Length: 336
Ligand SMILES: Cc1cc2nc3c(=O)[nH]c(=O)nc-3n(C[C@H](O)[C@H](O)[C@H](O)COP(=O)(O)O)c2cc1C
Image (spheres, rainbow, N blue to C red):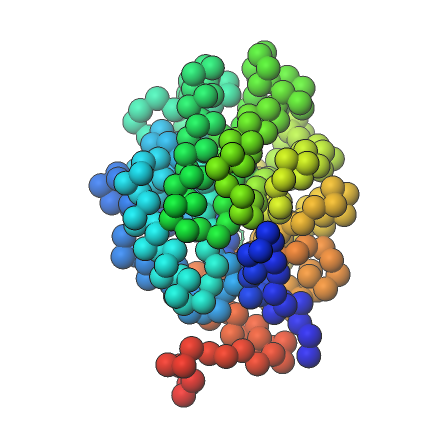
């Protein structure tokens, strides 16, 4: 039987063996504020590779120390991070999966002692007031993403995902709710897109592999960007060579989100149809038949699973069984 979920997918000569993607999920498990990987990361990510996932996107990894959400985030702001990340990449490759990294800057949602940066000096409710980025800060951010991409390449990652969702720095620039700037980085959509556009260009200057961008295509704020605006942003990203838009939602402002199975799939579907770009669907996708429906009906090209893969690293094998597919288990597990 042909199941879309288990059909390979190729972007720029990189083939994922199936369409199951582990969504990026912070583990807050780096020690000593150094941003380096620990045993936890080795075991956690390699387990999902053994579990049959096609692509693992590792957690939000800070391109600058002030861009961490917490002191325990992973980092890629220094060349000293490369060897640990390379170890992780090799481990996941040896266990049969591709691996991507989510490059991130937390902006006003950083929970750090030091000065935090955002487009405008508007705090996230109950959090510290950020400093509005000056031109030197903007240059540092763009260079941070570029250098992070270079290091990701040196570490051997298959995919880079730029984190422009969940109310972190790049999302804050995109949205009129958080961006009140009066210079060329604020105001109309061209200006609000400018920083993300420059980050994509900077990443492209050192990276020619598959490039994803994660967005929050519903900001849950009447003053925020509409889905139509995100379709426009997706067209711009596609024109800049972005291969896939990972369609999430929320995080910009506190909001009560009515989450139900596949609650964000519509965003992936509309962006895919209207911007004619590949998309990833994420959010409460836990049933194999649901994943199959999303792919089979052309609503997205990949499905990302977060919490389900925390609960069940072997979801891919169970999904295969449910869809009447025979997957080869690791030889060590075949007697099971
Ligand atoms: C523990 C945890 C950490 C997360 N960290 C990140 C992250 O680093 N980057 C990101 O874009 N999303 C992050 N998310 C969101 C997930 O990637 C995913 O979009 C969300 O959990 C919805 O998918 P699910 O219903 O399959 O869990 C995180 C979610 C969880 C539960």
